[in-house]
Image 1: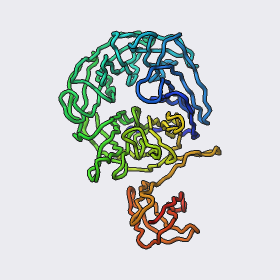
Image 2: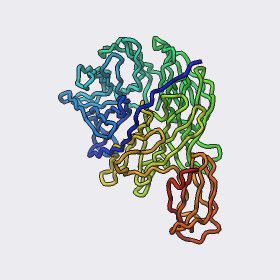
Image 3: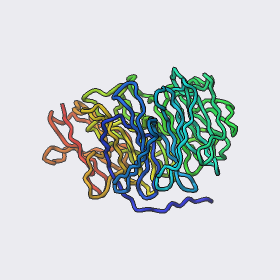
Image 4: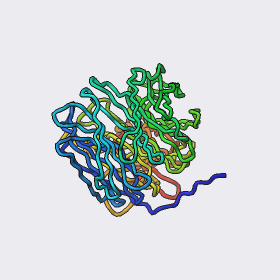
Length: 482
């Protein structure tokens, strides 16, 4: 019998907001193994619509929320950084795009950094003068080579075709295969290297390789296209797939899909699924509210684990189909499930602004990082918001927390006949209180969604206390009875 033992590290948490006066992007982060993270920040021009690349840099955020940035320059060449990978023998490789001056062509940028993030080398790989985009989705190290699933397209660029790369550790391209094939027009794909490191899988939500619904496509060691097969279940409304391996060789996946009992068109949930290595569906679960758009992270990782029985996921509640209106707010969804996708908690962070979650990252000390853009109504730009939670999904320490973390979500508010309470905590109860603290009613909560009747209450403002056995009231919500 194999038992995985993870050392328990001291945990720290932080909350960090990076205000910006330019369009700013962070696509992913890696663990610094000391309770903090290493991420890439890139900036582009404009507020909405078309943009041009400016520059990118490495940002370190320590376990206590302190930051250090490492800047780079390539004379008058603009660039955008999207992935950083820690090499097994020390140092880092960074991938991105570069835009030489006086041209609209976009090329591939590879950078080598030492352990202190000093630039060791940089290589720019141009394509045709019509090349519109190139994007590295992931980096896998295999001995002294790196495998990079990527996408590339030429003008006009609707979406990208698969381009698979193999490089040495100094960024020299050893093999490159571009599948300029309309059947593999990949939209927003997710890639995964097989456990035996011989097959690259590409996950897409529709119309790949002749499959009308969700699918996975396989490429062999020589980057040759092999086949495309349906991904079960064949839910044609599913999209934005994110995939990763759990430490017990189980595939974890998050995606967006509708719920069976939806009552309007605008109803999508965060879904999680587990597959074995033969792509057999083991189980799945969904999280979200009826008649709201609840989305997985926008473009980055939505699920991950360092232990098979502790799986973190993230998303955001009340997403907007287009640019959010002046009164639109949303909540970051931070959750944890066990190995069977049974919920341990689902917390709701925010509600004071419009948040758009970009990615999440489980950390080696047991915590989890979530990165989101926080819309600044004054600049019409998204400031970069980072929050690191502990293994219970909470902020600890002496620093004040600026963004509220709730263990339950109530709606609608105001309410007329019933109040819906979403809470994933086992054994929780809802206590209806007057504003003076007098208990008016007590209800047990299902692990999921519960309905609290309001018929016996007079119109006015009340409190709803969420209680746990042995802990009493852990949080309080105000609501209005119409």
